[in-house]
Image 1 (cartoon, rainbow, N blue to C red):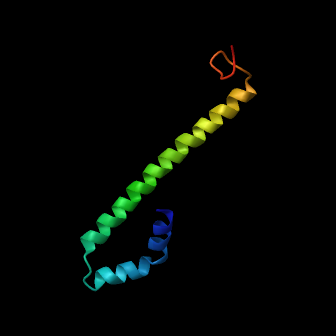
Image 2 (cartoon, rainbow, N blue to C red):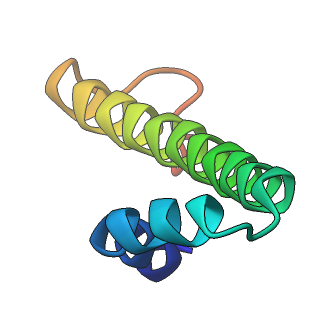
Image 3 (cartoon, rainbow, N blue to C red):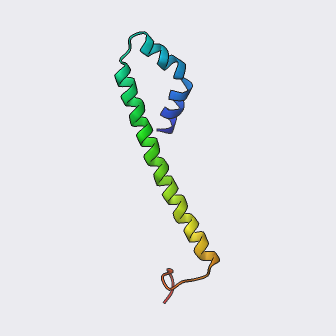
Length: 72
């Protein structure tokens, strides 16, 4: 997915030229929208994972709690 996004960025001019020459503009747009949605979903997932890792680190700084793993 990231490779596809990089290729779309790299070949931006060629994509525009293809559509100017009569290529299916609506299909290009739909494909780019789908790629955008996939990237946004991946971004949200990565952000949530980063937040969770940050919370774990914060919990280490603030000491053990009753809900921490490994407590009796």
